[in-house]
Amino acid sequence: MARVAIVGVGAIGGALASFLWTAGGHEITLCTRRPLKRLTVETPQGVLHIVARNVTDPAQADAVDWVLVATKAYDANGAAAWFPALCANGASVAVLQNGVEHRERFAKYVSPDRLLPVVIDCPAERTSDDQFRVRGPARMTVEDTLLGRSFAKLFRGCAAKLELTADFTTALWWKLCMNSVGALSALALKPSGVLREPAIERVARAMVAECAAVARAEGACIGDSIDDEVLTVYRGHPADSKNSLLADRLAGRRMEWDARNGAIVRKGEKHGIDTPLNRMAAALLEAVEGEPV
Image (cartoon, rainbow, N blue to C red; front, side):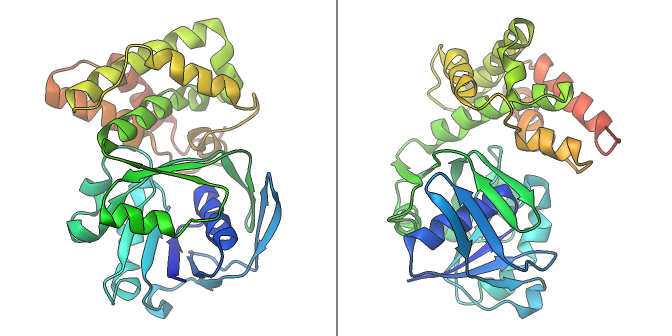
Protein backbone atom coordinates (compact mmCIF):
# COMPACT_ATOMS: atom_id res chain seq x y z
CA MET A 1 0.00 0.00 0.00
CA ALA A 2 1.15 3.53 -0.74
CA ARG A 3 -0.05 6.98 0.20
CA VAL A 4 -0.64 8.76 -3.10
CA ALA A 5 -1.72 12.35 -3.71
CA ILE A 6 -3.14 13.52 -7.03
CA VAL A 7 -2.65 17.24 -7.60
CA GLY A 8 -5.20 18.43 -10.13
CA VAL A 9 -8.33 16.34 -10.58
CA GLY A 10 -9.38 17.09 -14.14
CA ALA A 11 -9.94 14.39 -16.76
CA ILE A 12 -6.51 12.79 -16.29
CA GLY A 13 -6.52 13.20 -12.51
CA GLY A 14 -9.91 11.49 -12.31
CA ALA A 15 -8.68 8.66 -14.51
CA LEU A 16 -5.58 8.23 -12.33
CA ALA A 17 -7.77 8.01 -9.24
CA SER A 18 -9.76 5.21 -10.89
CA PHE A 19 -6.59 3.29 -11.79
CA LEU A 20 -5.21 3.57 -8.25
CA TRP A 21 -8.58 2.57 -6.80
CA THR A 22 -8.82 -0.59 -8.92
CA ALA A 23 -5.18 -1.45 -8.19
CA GLY A 24 -6.33 -1.56 -4.58
CA GLY A 25 -4.88 -0.88 -1.16
CA HIS A 26 -3.72 2.70 -1.69
CA GLU A 27 -4.58 5.69 0.47
CA ILE A 28 -5.60 8.35 -2.06
CA THR A 29 -5.63 12.11 -1.48
CA LEU A 30 -7.21 14.44 -4.04
CA CYS A 31 -5.73 17.94 -4.04
CA THR A 32 -8.17 20.37 -5.63
CA ARG A 33 -9.09 24.05 -5.58
CA ARG A 34 -12.76 23.36 -4.90
CA PRO A 35 -14.16 20.60 -2.67
CA LEU A 36 -15.30 17.35 -4.26
CA LYS A 37 -18.38 15.79 -2.70
CA ARG A 38 -17.61 12.45 -4.32
CA LEU A 39 -15.67 11.00 -7.24
CA THR A 40 -17.47 8.82 -9.77
CA VAL A 41 -15.65 7.44 -12.80
CA GLU A 42 -17.36 5.63 -15.66
CA THR A 43 -14.93 3.12 -17.20
CA PRO A 44 -15.25 0.39 -19.84
CA GLN A 45 -15.19 -2.09 -16.93
CA GLY A 46 -18.00 -0.38 -15.01
CA VAL A 47 -18.78 2.63 -12.83
CA LEU A 48 -16.45 3.28 -9.89
CA HIS A 49 -17.33 5.21 -6.74
CA ILE A 50 -13.95 6.16 -5.35
CA VAL A 51 -13.30 6.80 -1.68
CA ALA A 52 -10.53 9.32 -1.17
CA ARG A 53 -9.55 12.20 1.05
CA ASN A 54 -10.12 15.61 -0.52
CA VAL A 55 -7.96 18.58 0.47
CA THR A 56 -8.37 22.11 -0.89
CA ASP A 57 -5.68 23.88 1.13
CA PRO A 58 -1.99 22.89 0.87
CA ALA A 59 -1.59 23.70 4.56
CA GLN A 60 -4.01 20.85 5.38
CA ALA A 61 -2.17 18.23 3.33
CA ASP A 62 -0.23 15.39 4.94
CA ALA A 63 3.00 13.80 3.76
CA VAL A 64 2.62 11.02 1.20
CA ASP A 65 4.83 8.53 -0.64
CA TRP A 66 4.01 9.66 -4.19
CA VAL A 67 2.68 12.89 -5.69
CA LEU A 68 1.06 12.64 -9.13
CA VAL A 69 0.86 16.02 -10.85
CA ALA A 70 -2.04 16.14 -13.31
CA THR A 71 -2.56 19.89 -13.53
CA LYS A 72 -2.34 21.82 -16.77
CA ALA A 73 1.23 22.34 -17.96
CA TYR A 74 1.07 26.11 -17.40
CA ASP A 75 0.24 25.67 -13.70
CA ALA A 76 3.57 24.38 -12.41
CA ASN A 77 3.67 27.06 -9.71
CA GLY A 78 0.20 26.13 -8.47
CA ALA A 79 1.07 22.44 -8.36
CA ALA A 80 4.35 23.11 -6.57
CA ALA A 81 2.52 24.93 -3.77
CA TRP A 82 1.44 21.48 -2.56
CA PHE A 83 4.95 20.02 -2.47
CA PRO A 84 6.22 21.32 0.92
CA ALA A 85 3.51 19.42 2.78
CA LEU A 86 3.07 16.42 0.50
CA CYS A 87 6.82 15.86 0.06
CA ALA A 88 7.80 16.51 3.68
CA ASN A 89 9.11 12.95 3.98
CA GLY A 90 10.81 12.90 0.58
CA ALA A 91 7.96 11.80 -1.68
CA SER A 92 8.68 11.18 -5.34
CA VAL A 93 6.86 13.36 -7.87
CA ALA A 94 5.45 12.00 -11.13
CA VAL A 95 4.54 14.64 -13.71
CA LEU A 96 1.70 13.60 -16.03
CA GLN A 97 1.37 16.64 -18.28
CA ASN A 98 1.46 17.46 -21.95
CA GLY A 99 4.58 18.55 -23.80
CA VAL A 100 8.25 17.64 -23.51
CA GLU A 101 9.39 20.06 -20.82
CA HIS A 102 8.40 18.21 -17.65
CA ARG A 103 11.82 18.50 -16.04
CA GLU A 104 12.27 22.14 -17.01
CA ARG A 105 8.94 23.07 -15.38
CA PHE A 106 9.70 21.44 -12.03
CA ALA A 107 13.50 21.54 -11.77
CA LYS A 108 13.43 24.34 -9.19
CA TYR A 109 10.89 22.54 -7.00
CA VAL A 110 12.00 18.88 -6.97
CA SER A 111 15.44 17.27 -6.99
CA PRO A 112 16.12 15.30 -10.20
CA ASP A 113 16.37 11.96 -8.39
CA ARG A 114 12.76 12.31 -7.17
CA LEU A 115 11.20 13.66 -10.40
CA LEU A 116 9.63 11.28 -12.92
CA PRO A 117 8.15 12.48 -16.23
CA VAL A 118 5.27 10.29 -17.43
CA VAL A 119 3.71 10.01 -20.88
CA ILE A 120 0.03 9.18 -20.55
CA ASP A 121 -2.39 8.34 -23.33
CA CYS A 122 -5.88 8.11 -21.91
CA PRO A 123 -9.17 9.04 -23.61
CA ALA A 124 -10.83 10.61 -20.59
CA GLU A 125 -13.16 13.52 -19.94
CA ARG A 126 -14.68 15.33 -17.01
CA THR A 127 -18.46 15.33 -17.43
CA SER A 128 -19.23 17.36 -14.29
CA ASP A 129 -17.44 18.61 -11.17
CA ASP A 130 -17.26 15.15 -9.62
CA GLN A 131 -18.00 12.79 -12.51
CA PHE A 132 -15.53 11.49 -15.07
CA ARG A 133 -15.45 9.10 -18.00
CA VAL A 134 -12.60 6.92 -19.24
CA ARG A 135 -13.63 6.10 -22.80
CA GLY A 136 -11.05 3.49 -23.73
CA PRO A 137 -7.73 1.80 -23.00
CA ALA A 138 -5.09 3.86 -21.17
CA ARG A 139 -1.33 3.58 -21.36
CA MET A 140 1.45 5.19 -19.35
CA THR A 141 5.12 5.17 -20.32
CA VAL A 142 8.02 5.89 -17.97
CA GLU A 143 11.77 5.51 -17.95
CA ASP A 144 13.05 2.05 -17.07
CA THR A 145 14.76 3.17 -13.87
CA LEU A 146 14.34 2.34 -10.20
CA LEU A 147 11.96 5.29 -9.86
CA GLY A 148 10.04 4.29 -12.97
CA ARG A 149 9.63 0.73 -11.75
CA SER A 150 8.44 1.99 -8.36
CA PHE A 151 5.81 4.12 -10.11
CA ALA A 152 4.66 1.18 -12.22
CA LYS A 153 4.06 -0.90 -9.06
CA LEU A 154 1.42 1.58 -7.93
CA PHE A 155 -0.83 0.51 -10.80
CA ARG A 156 -0.45 -3.26 -10.74
CA GLY A 157 -3.80 -4.91 -11.28
CA CYS A 158 -5.54 -1.92 -12.87
CA ALA A 159 -6.79 -1.58 -16.44
CA ALA A 160 -4.09 0.88 -17.51
CA LYS A 161 -1.05 -0.50 -19.30
CA LEU A 162 2.36 0.53 -17.91
CA GLU A 163 5.34 0.50 -20.23
CA LEU A 164 8.96 0.85 -19.11
CA THR A 165 11.32 2.13 -21.78
CA ALA A 166 15.02 2.82 -22.15
CA ASP A 167 14.21 5.44 -24.81
CA PHE A 168 11.90 7.86 -23.06
CA THR A 169 12.85 10.72 -25.40
CA THR A 170 11.19 8.93 -28.29
CA ALA A 171 8.06 8.19 -26.26
CA LEU A 172 7.83 11.83 -25.19
CA TRP A 173 8.16 13.22 -28.72
CA TRP A 174 5.88 10.60 -30.28
CA LYS A 175 3.14 11.82 -27.96
CA LEU A 176 3.86 15.44 -28.89
CA CYS A 177 3.55 14.53 -32.57
CA MET A 178 0.09 13.22 -31.64
CA ASN A 179 -0.81 16.29 -29.62
CA SER A 180 0.42 18.81 -32.20
CA VAL A 181 -2.60 18.34 -34.45
CA GLY A 182 -5.06 18.73 -31.58
CA ALA A 183 -4.73 22.44 -32.26
CA LEU A 184 -6.75 21.96 -35.44
CA SER A 185 -9.78 20.75 -33.47
CA ALA A 186 -9.51 23.70 -31.11
CA LEU A 187 -9.22 26.18 -33.98
CA ALA A 188 -12.05 24.63 -35.99
CA LEU A 189 -14.21 24.16 -32.87
CA LYS A 190 -14.87 20.59 -33.98
CA PRO A 191 -14.09 17.24 -32.29
CA SER A 192 -11.51 14.79 -33.59
CA GLY A 193 -13.65 13.75 -36.54
CA VAL A 194 -12.50 16.95 -38.27
CA LEU A 195 -9.16 15.24 -38.93
CA ARG A 196 -10.94 12.88 -41.33
CA GLU A 197 -11.64 15.75 -43.71
CA PRO A 198 -9.09 15.64 -46.59
CA ALA A 199 -8.04 19.30 -46.41
CA ILE A 200 -7.57 19.19 -42.64
CA GLU A 201 -5.74 15.87 -42.91
CA ARG A 202 -3.17 17.44 -45.25
CA VAL A 203 -2.50 20.24 -42.79
CA ALA A 204 -2.27 17.74 -39.93
CA ARG A 205 0.34 15.69 -41.81
CA ALA A 206 2.46 18.80 -42.38
CA MET A 207 2.22 19.79 -38.69
CA VAL A 208 3.32 16.31 -37.64
CA ALA A 209 6.23 16.46 -40.09
CA GLU A 210 7.45 19.70 -38.46
CA CYS A 211 7.25 18.14 -35.00
CA ALA A 212 9.01 14.98 -36.18
CA ALA A 213 11.91 16.98 -37.62
CA VAL A 214 12.42 18.73 -34.28
CA ALA A 215 12.03 15.44 -32.41
CA ARG A 216 14.84 13.85 -34.41
CA ALA A 217 17.08 16.83 -33.69
CA GLU A 218 16.33 16.26 -29.98
CA GLY A 219 17.46 12.63 -30.27
CA ALA A 220 14.11 10.88 -30.71
CA CYS A 221 13.81 7.93 -33.09
CA ILE A 222 10.75 9.00 -35.06
CA GLY A 223 10.11 7.17 -38.33
CA ASP A 224 9.01 8.61 -41.67
CA SER A 225 5.55 7.06 -41.28
CA ILE A 226 4.73 9.07 -38.15
CA ASP A 227 1.98 11.05 -39.93
CA ASP A 228 0.22 7.81 -40.88
CA GLU A 229 0.62 6.52 -37.33
CA VAL A 230 -0.86 9.68 -35.81
CA LEU A 231 -3.84 9.82 -38.14
CA THR A 232 -4.51 6.11 -37.67
CA VAL A 233 -4.79 6.71 -33.93
CA TYR A 234 -7.17 9.62 -34.42
CA ARG A 235 -9.33 7.60 -36.80
CA GLY A 236 -9.66 5.04 -34.04
CA HIS A 237 -11.09 7.63 -31.66
CA PRO A 238 -14.83 8.30 -31.57
CA ALA A 239 -15.57 11.10 -34.07
CA ASP A 240 -17.15 13.16 -31.27
CA SER A 241 -14.20 12.94 -28.86
CA LYS A 242 -12.79 16.26 -27.70
CA ASN A 243 -9.14 16.78 -26.86
CA SER A 244 -8.28 19.01 -23.91
CA LEU A 245 -7.45 22.03 -26.09
CA LEU A 246 -10.91 21.99 -27.63
CA ALA A 247 -12.63 21.29 -24.30
CA ASP A 248 -10.81 24.20 -22.67
CA ARG A 249 -11.57 26.59 -25.51
CA LEU A 250 -15.27 25.69 -25.47
CA ALA A 251 -15.31 26.32 -21.71
CA GLY A 252 -13.48 29.64 -22.03
CA ARG A 253 -10.50 28.34 -20.08
CA ARG A 254 -6.81 28.87 -20.64
CA MET A 255 -5.36 26.36 -23.14
CA GLU A 256 -2.12 24.38 -23.21
CA TRP A 257 -1.07 25.56 -26.67
CA ASP A 258 2.32 26.71 -25.35
CA ALA A 259 3.26 23.30 -23.92
CA ARG A 260 2.28 21.67 -27.21
CA ASN A 261 2.74 23.76 -30.34
CA GLY A 262 4.75 26.42 -28.53
CA ALA A 263 7.28 23.82 -27.37
CA ILE A 264 7.71 22.59 -30.95
CA VAL A 265 8.46 26.15 -32.05
CA ARG A 266 10.92 26.75 -29.18
CA LYS A 267 12.84 23.52 -29.69
CA GLY A 268 12.82 24.05 -33.44
CA GLU A 269 14.41 27.48 -33.07
CA LYS A 270 17.12 25.92 -30.90
CA HIS A 271 18.05 23.62 -33.77
CA GLY A 272 17.44 26.08 -36.60
CA ILE A 273 14.36 24.18 -37.81
CA ASP A 274 11.45 26.25 -39.10
CA THR A 275 7.99 25.21 -37.87
CA PRO A 276 5.58 27.66 -39.56
CA LEU A 277 2.36 25.68 -39.13
CA ASN A 278 2.91 25.04 -35.44
CA ARG A 279 3.94 28.67 -34.97
CA MET A 280 0.73 29.81 -36.64
CA ALA A 281 -1.37 27.41 -34.55
CA ALA A 282 0.23 28.70 -31.33
CA ALA A 283 -0.28 32.33 -32.37
CA LEU A 284 -3.94 31.79 -33.30
CA LEU A 285 -4.75 29.88 -30.12
CA GLU A 286 -3.10 32.57 -28.03
CA ALA A 287 -5.14 35.20 -29.87
CA VAL A 288 -8.51 33.50 -29.26
CA GLU A 289 -7.77 32.32 -25.72
CA GLY A 290 -10.43 33.37 -23.27
CA GLU A 291 -12.76 34.79 -25.93
CA PRO A 292 -16.38 33.60 -25.83
CA VAL A 293 -17.21 30.91 -28.40
